Amino acid sequence: MNIGMMTDTYIPQINGVATSVNLFKRYLESMGERVYVFSPMIPKNESGTFKVTGLKFLWEPQHRFAIPISHKILKLSTRLKIDVVHSHAPFSMGFQALRISEKLGLPHVHTYHTLLTEYRHYIPFPFRPTENAVREFSGWFCNSTDAVIAPTEKIKNELLSYGVEVPIYILPTGIDVDNFRRPLNFSVRKKHSIPENDRIILFVGRIAKEKNPDFIIKAFAKLHDKLRNTTLIMIGDGPEMKEVSHLASRLKVLNHVVMTGYMPRNEIVEYYRESDVFAFASVTETQGLVVLEALAAGLPVVAVAKEGVADVLVDGVGCSLIDDVLLEPFVDKLLKILENPGLSVKMADDGMNYVLKHWSMETMTQRLDEIYKEVVKFSKKRRKKYGSQSFFAYLHRFGLRVF
Image (cartoon, rainbow, N blue to C red; front, side):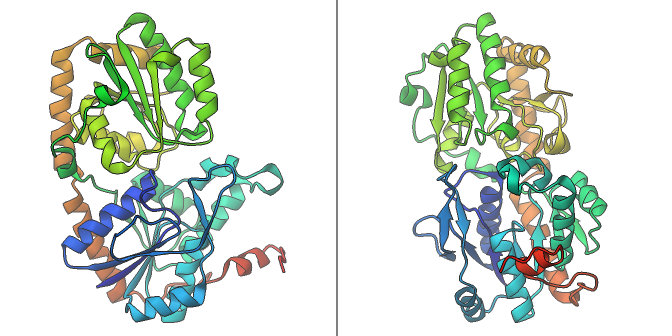
């Protein structure tokens, strides 16, 4: 089977969608499928990837806004004999996927990776849509495809509330367990001059409001008052980098905080493996891949049990969860792990076994392959209500004549 994946983000970018697309591509190819990724960001020398023209976001230059040239992608998709189109965002490359599907008569599978209602704050006020508009748009896009993949039951129920009528499959992204068992390539402590007796608290994610990085800084400041030999490492980039750094300075812990900025994915394993506890306070996760990666590396997790994190973790199985964004309970759980080596070892073993049993990429990829085959076999273009439409056709439904 020839699978065309249309995505606005791909490695070397660090985010859940890029990771998911890359992992599924690799594992599908290991099963004998042919996968082609179309994206404005692609790595060097990776076969089966095609770079689409893109513009940098002014406020986040590490990201690209795809400006796909439709006829070129259409010709390439025809030459590659694509059997099924799989989109990973309902934006520029998502509309490209709709066009390819419509023009070539191909089944279209869409993964709804992100709760878009939680990301409206990135759009300036004059153009910021209402929550209802985002819900309607999401429902329209999903109903313009043949099937939708939701990472969790909660996301599926959310889409059903939007009026999505096409089949919805629940399929989380799995974890590449073997990657967390490989030999280490470098020492994190030596690289950042971290004292040998310091305990390392790790955060991985975008440094952006929805990930709650300021809470992590505040929690670390309280923790550091009680346990002096500690260092916080924050891996990731984003619009809140300066604000988070200033907060650490005001709380007098900046000298004990390492902010790495953007980092290639192949270097992050070392940080998971050499840290002592993983701290995560995001309340807008669709799935929360980083917490599962931490468990796969044998790293105990302390996290807020909201949205996707609550769907993938089991309190007490490699992790310690709190019900809400509360500073004191969060710090207490971090301290309990750091001050109890026996508990830390048990949590590490439990976490690794949990991921291996329930979240391996082999299991998830086999299911994705079955979904493709099912959609290809039985799809009769279920677009009875909305049909496949261009972005401007969508705007025209609301009387917004752009041209």
